[in-house]
Amino acid sequence: MTLFLSWLSWLRHMINNYHMLRWISFLFVVFVLVSCVSGRTIKDEQVRDFQVGVTRYEEVLEALGKPSSRTVDSQGDVYLHYKRAVYTIKPESFLPIVGEHVGGMNSSSKSTVVVFSPDGVMKDVVGQNVKSDAAMAH
Image (tube, rainbow, N blue to C red; front, side, top):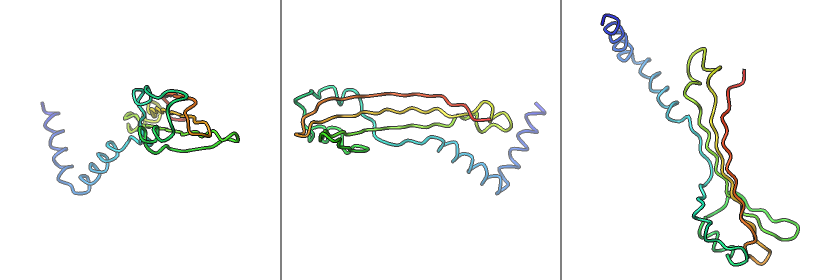
């Protein structure tokens, strides 16, 4: 009980201290923003109705929106690339001393590529999901 009261007294002192409040606010923001997301999520059900040899370029753009990138190969085939990546820092990374040994980052990415012939008819749809768990370098 005495330990709890002394801890509570210390906490009250720190919160009353303006600089400590700024530090706590900064840490809160860091913990909230430890995740970085880029790209657009393409769900399997969104491409399920696409048919090779039938679905048109315009239909895919209408259904999926603007792609992350668009390329054209030497035969005139058009590739629409839809990519999404999510990176999350493990909370253990922020622990003093041991954080560098137990921390790291989780990442996941999803890539969908829709291929069209030069006349705008879909030739193929390829999707890939990748997840990784990376430890911090020592």
